[in-house]
Image (cartoon, rainbow, N blue to C red):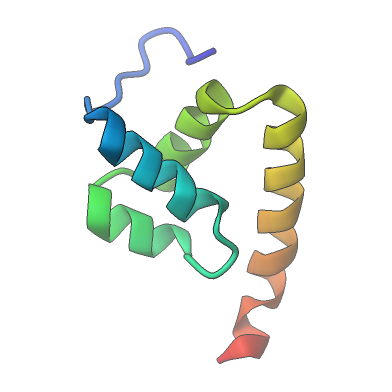
Length: 75
């Protein structure tokens, strides 16, 4: 559920699906999503929380945190 007073830009269904695929992909950083869609990291998290199951969201956050901590090793 989105936080009270939290406003998100409206996107078409195809844009929303593309956004979710990008967010779920392990090789796409938040800054790429921000550049493409114009939304911040916190908004990405809120949209993902509203779009996927609770268990799926928790697994996604753990995976993203693990990759974010090691991303500097891939460059």
